[in-house]
Image (cartoon, rainbow, N blue to C red; front, side):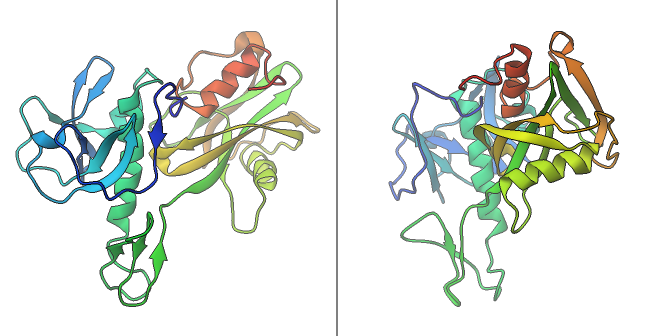
Length: 278
């Protein structure tokens, strides 16, 4: 999956280390672009030495090399272009350190950008001096990075798996039922509610599989396998889904994501491994 970087080591605790020339720059534009160069499926980021001196916000490090959020330079360094970040999601190399760095970096960039001013009193926020947070100097309101809990539900009926396609979204591959947790709701109840809302089906015997930080949408995904409880007739929530249908293991299409928890769970069912340890 996207975050499976081993043997590389990702360190996300905040640091106040000054940037060095060989550290890497994450320059995101308001039009959802990233300053980078593409070499096949590999994303090449500019070094801090390639970027004009200015504000640099430490983001994280990978293998001891730091990544910084920086303003977009007026003139791109030679060989670098503004690439739509939506195109990065289509990359096929799920072990790419650069892909993960770009996705996680954009999540942080969106959060910093959305919290420039205090939501309580309107005063300009300041970065915390002790942790990853934005703090209001006037009223002390503190805001932490945005992480939204959500579920991925693989609904099974014997040797059949329910696959869906989203409605009105650019992502057109097959996926599993998914949705965000509501206030006061357990994750298990989120699975039951989302499956019923989107397909009209009831489920039982929920089994937690694995989690994934899906930084493209600031989401922490929690994957569950669950079994059909009752009728297999689907009542489609057309505002969310364009399709929901049952597939036998032999019929499951290869048309799904290969960097996501959804794709891994689909493949796990196809290979009859859903009841074994991840």
